[in-house]
Image (cartoon, rainbow, N blue to C red; front, side, top):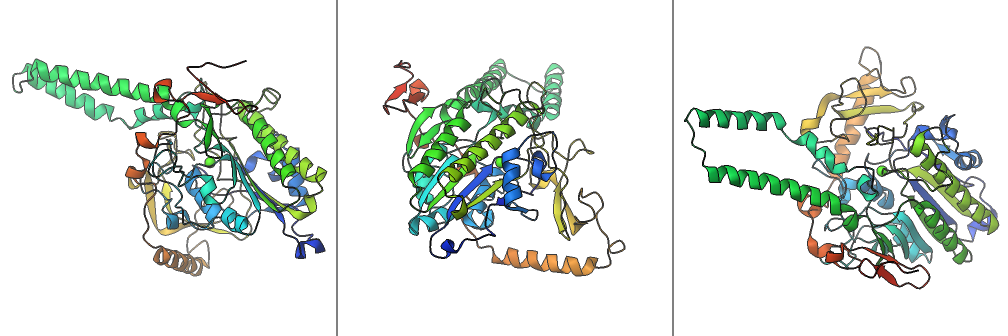
Length: 491
Ligand SMILES: [Ca+2]
């Protein structure tokens, strides 16, 4: 299960220079994908080195009561950008899959939503998103970009419209192999054996043609599935600059270095005017990667190497601010989009998940109206489904909700009762009233994560070359010329 807790630093917000009263402050928002609160030195980790992030915390404000609106990328980011619960924009799924997996779908953050980037752009800010988006791309054809970052207030975009997945890097397996866990092998086996026995006994007649058709359908389904897995990175793991696809599929190894350079260039270009930079790191989501200078440097395998590389990048951004003498007029914020993906173990058995730590809240009550059914039972994750699903078959409801006092029980091991907590009824009354008011205030809106909006639509497929070339291409950063699969790679 992913923790809903996140972490934040505010750089010199409290020491506001007088100049701020007349000049517009700059904003740098950094979001690290799937980072655990327990992975950072400033939150108590003693085995992972994160000196630059620790310095941010030391010089600024460390928030300990900051909550992500959802435990998944897409809805959490929709809430982050708009300041509204994802259900209000239709970005909260009612089905098993709560995020966008493929790029050629019609769902996404609705155009009419007001993001902080739109507000700042209207105020004359230079605005940029570098890194991951994961909030949709197109509506009706493959270049309408109705959900693209440019539509939502970011003038400059360099990054991936989707998410980094295991399938985006060879040798990391596939998220689709988890489909096997949902196939009812037992029921299918019993059905087939029963049918066979009835046929042998002469009670049911199965024609040879029927058996051949069944076999053919089975083989075709399997072939289509493997074709889907094989071609996935070509159609879904691509890098964009503005509205153009510039690398398809992308090579992840040096992406953080490239994106850090891009961010530095943006700061240099806009040092004379107010700016908003949203740096949305692809790390430390799987498929994990780290550039050569960080590989093998941590005590926590590739995951730790990736955290160290993010920390380096944060240091580069802060050094640039210092060099450009912008530090005192820039609000810097760093957070995770939710907690770590606890079920992430690589195909080679290496731990690829972060650590939630122990949340040390102060006088914080936490209520669970439902909890995921963990597997194995004594674990705190859903290893049977690779992520905890929030649909009926996978959760247990609690009425009244389970209540914890995080100031005394940070690990959430002992639910409170009217006997153990004298104020139980009063606390519950406040929580239930807040939940009721929230529920009543939610207006019906189009579900952007409905099955229809998540279905692959060939006419929405972004493609850098052509379908028969599997959309492959690379754009030369100097000349801007696309080098596609058929032409090969130039010198
Ligand atoms: Ca995430």
